[in-house]
Amino acid sequence: MADFTAAQAAVVRIERAEEGRWDLSLISDSGVAMGHGVYLFDADHDDAEDEQTAALDFVREYGFRFERDTVQTEGLGVFWAPLLPADQQ
Image (cartoon, rainbow, N blue to C red; front, side, top):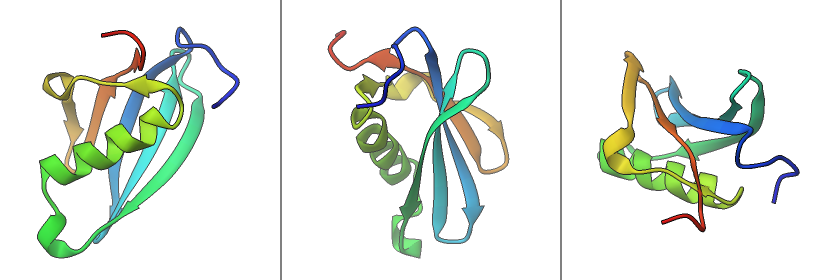
């Protein structure tokens, strides 16, 4: 568990770094990267469902979650979603 509060972690950012790799970042409400992960995949697993599942697994490690219907497109191969505390349903 990271040493920051739920109020500080604002979003998860999902960005295609290269073919077969998505970079996952927790970004604070002040724009600071607070956690980073990488999702490597085969071409047959390159879809929104798999990348969102990987992002959910990633943010759970930090005690967060996000709603799939809140994922926003920022640009080509870049997405983000607001974070919620994992224990808040």
